[in-house]
Image: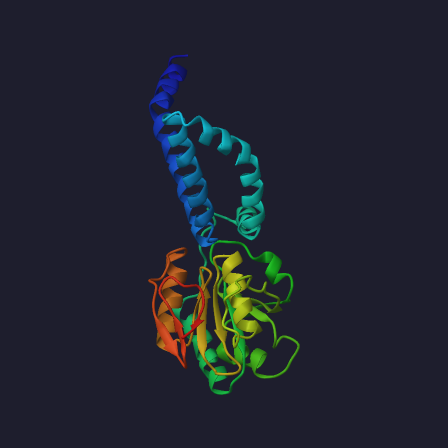
Length: 280
């Protein structure tokens, strides 16, 4: 029994540290989840209301307390309705998230093969849509297409997207260093201020980046511009060097966010901390 008592005493010492560590991890993941789903506004609104109620309680403002108590349930319902898309995304991410799954990313040679294919298709004005999953499982997206489990090569990618075959209009999924599937259907973006000249591919790339932490490479069929979408933002008309560097950085760091940038082209500008292009 002595060893059990020593073990219990040791656990009593470790328990507070373990308790705080697990709580800190959960808070960090919750913050990361909220930021990626752009639901920070919901938290700010709830914090503001809590602050107002705290002030009313502390200073004994009975009328304000009474009003907040009356409208409180209605505000909760209103928030649930207004932020329904964001709440749905949070629930989806909680169901799909695999926080402890080890990252399996393509190596630099495979990334260069994808970017080379993008350059070829860009010159030919052929559309392309390639998804690089990170930590969130997108098996439901893979199941919408044709499984390939093929080695990554620029010639194969060009073959899929160059001609009007059955897999041409869908998205290709690159996962675990291989082409997992092609012809996959992506969710379209729910953002309302997307530039009207953007087609379905750009809207699908944004939609995928809103509902997962994947990085999406898209080539415009109209302009040949090569773009990246991630963290609910679209970075339009990047050079092949920028695309390769950014893909390597994002896939290496997992959830690390890129610095907000500014890219302009033909009267459009991607402003700092903006999700999509806006007209000048």
